[in-house]
Image (cartoon, rainbow, N blue to C red; front, side, top):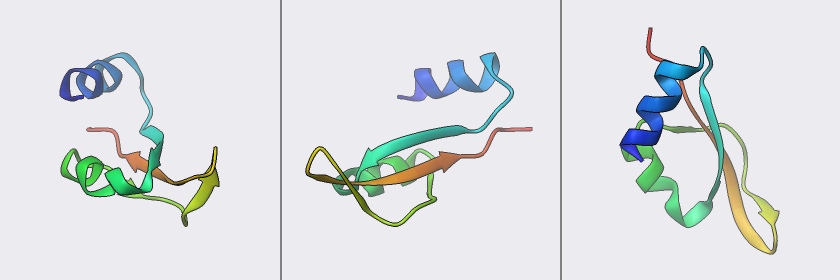
Length: 56
């Protein structure tokens, strides 16, 4: 994940937005993502939108 995040941060000029399964919230928070939505169902699994702001 750190390699993928690094690639995105150096290749794109935008924040990284993901749709994460709710049970992985703490994992993604440990990588710098923050929750940006309420939980919602996707394929009968609770998900949340998360975002990692781009480094300046």
